Length: 531
Image (tube, rainbow, N blue to C red):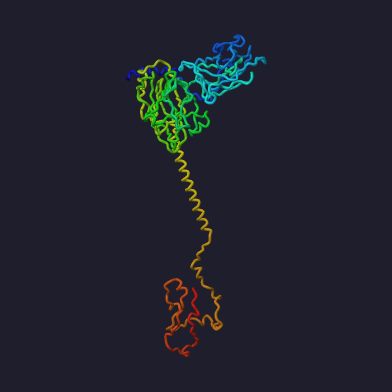
C-alpha cells in the first residue's frame, strides 16, 4: 500500500496544475449575458431550421435580433397554426443555463409585416436524450411574442433551461405568415450536474404541495434523470406559506416523515465528469413551530459508476436549533473526496424536511479513474472521520447565533449595571445636597441666652452675686442636689428641689455682711441648660 501511495504521488503531483480545473457554482443573477445571436458568436452553421421560405434571404442564419441583412429575419415556408411545427434551432454544443429569450418580427427596412404573437420553446441535452417542451411556472407552454415588427420582446425564464440545443416554435391561434429574429441569454453550466434523482415531494393539507414543479426528467414516485428546482439557484422565503401566494416564489421541495416509515430521503447527483469535491451547501427550512426542521443527520457517499459506493461516508450531525426559525444554508465539508456520483441521505429531525437549493463546490479531474483507483486515493489520504463532522453553516451559523446571543446578553447585563450605578450615584448626590429633616439634639435643646430670660419685677433688683450660693456648710449647689434623671428629656427638664438649710437656725448677726435669702417657689427658676 505504501508503494502504491508513492507511485500515485509521483504520478499526480507534476500534473496537479493540469488535472484540476476549479469550478465555481453558477450564480443565476450573473448568468444574464447574450450568448451570441446578435454578436455573431454563434456561427451560422450552428443555426438551423425546419424550413425556410427563401433560404438566401430569410434563412435561419438571418434570424438574429437587431439585424437587417437581406430579408431581415427567418421566415418558415408554412404558415403558423396551432398544429404546424416550424422551428429555428440553435446548437450551443455544451450545456448552458438559459435564463431569458428575446424575439423580434421582420422589419425588413420597413417592408416587413410578419411577426409571431406567441411562441413555444423546446430544448435538448445529452442526459435527457430527447426534446422537452419548456413550461414556465406562470404561463405554461405558450410565451408572449411580439405586437409589431420592430419592438423586441424579452422573456425571463422561470425556471431556467439547461440545454445544449434550443428551438423557437412560432405559434398562432389563426393561420398566418410569421417571421422571427431571436436571441438567448445565459451562461455555461459549470456546476457540471447532469441530473439528480430523488423521491417526489409530498403534499401538506389541501393548500400546499412541496413538489419539484420544474423537474424535466421522468416523473413518478421517484424522479429520475432530470434537473429542476434544487439546482436553479433560487431560494424560497423563510415562511413556506408565502410562496404559494405568488407561484413564482414556490421553490420548497418537502418530504413527510410518517409516509416513509422513518427512512432517510435519498438524493443522487450525476455529474458530467469525475470531480474532486470540497463542500456541499443545502438551503433548508427550520420553522420548528410548524413541524419543520433541518435534517438531524446527513450521510454523503461517492461513486464513479453510480452502482458501487465504496469507502466510509461523510457523516454530519446537525445541532438542533429551536431558537431561530429562519431558513439557512447548511455547509458540509467534503474533504476533497472524488467521484462522479454523489448520494445524500437526509435523516428527519421533525415531521417535515424542506429543501430549496443544493449546490456543490468541486473541481474537474482529468484522466481515467476506476473504483479501485478512487478507493486507493481515498485510502492514501486517510482523513480523520472526526474532521468530517466539522462543518459550517453560513460560516458556522450556529456559532454565530450563539455568539450573537451571548454578546447581546452581556451587553444587556452591562447596561443594567451601568443604569444601577448611575441611579445609586444620583441618589447619593441628592442626599448630600438635601438638608436634614431631623435636627441635631444639641440644636434642639440649645439653651436660651441669659438676656432673653424675662425675670419677674419682684427680683429685678437682685444682682448675680446676690444669688450666688452661700459659702457655708450645709448648703449645696443646686446642681449637686439635682437627681440624675433616667432619660435625656428628664435631664434637661428636671425640677430643682427646695433648699433645706443644714442647720435650723441662722442668725444674721453672725455674718459680717448679712444677706437675705428668699426661698424660690418650687419650679419658679429652673436651671437652664449650660448655666
